[in-house]
Image (cartoon, rainbow, N blue to C red; front, side, top):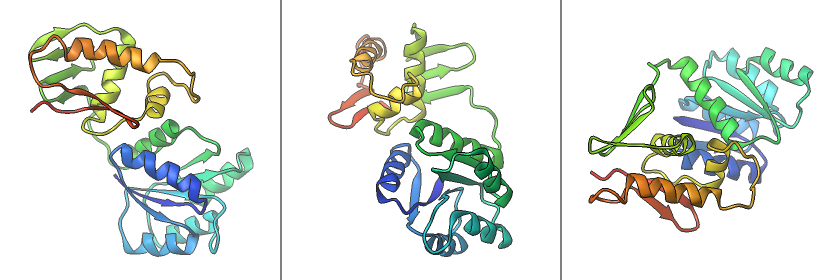
Length: 226
């Protein structure tokens, strides 16, 4: 996806941009409402993420202007104002979704993906394939080189998460949020243990190229062995 983030808080912007790019998306950034308006009118985006409180043109006014210009791109508002009345104002202004700060990155990513699917409906994915590793989401079966691999439920979920982001570096934070649904660091080696178990099942028994890699200081990556 090509995403426009309109956010004046530089630290928040860096956090969101880093996470979205690690998830394989292209991200442009505007630091105020006026710049965001110019970029939206001159380029095409799949989803626009707008902070509620922006300099020059505030978030609600910006959304109203975009809708008046017949820009129908899905819009998600980020805001420290989490009251129901504020959410209603945002949706009435023309936003498609509203996420209160602080938020988990996994929830932000999920909401962005839902907005994109809503405007670009596709057949639900039931089969994943990376190199000679395949996963059937209906039968819950995994094969490598046509040999069945038995996985525990958490191992299956971990592998699915990695396969959906194949050839990308997946951070520990993304795994904690997306696989374990932790929005904090539990200070355990749970990820290392499950990665080791998964590697012992999808890599070690096969006399082929390695697929599951540890990227020191960054996270993990599942790469095609083709």
